[in-house]
Image (spheres, rainbow, N blue to C red):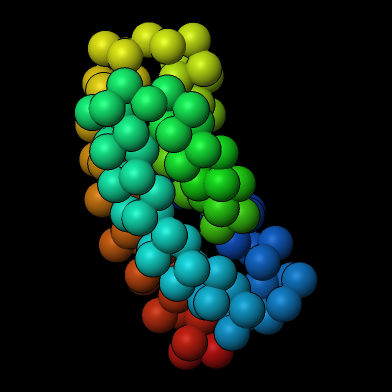
Length: 120
């Protein structure tokens, strides 16, 4: 299986085409605010064995991540949602840790791109 790149530049280019730099920057900001909140919700649900809660946190995160091109985050959110649906608690915990890392890795790249949008 090929590793998923952390950032899909084409998704960001699409946001620029659709709504311009301000819109693209706003979408990045929304993701950067949203992702840690959904991660925390999923982690709390996982600690309680609430697999539906994990699914509920991951589903909107995968969509939001896809919009801004956070490809690795999206892929992990999809995987975690599926694992939670199957009730695989050990795998969910492991993948949530990977998701936290992926969010941390993509954040500086998105901030850099947002700064480029603002300079336009």
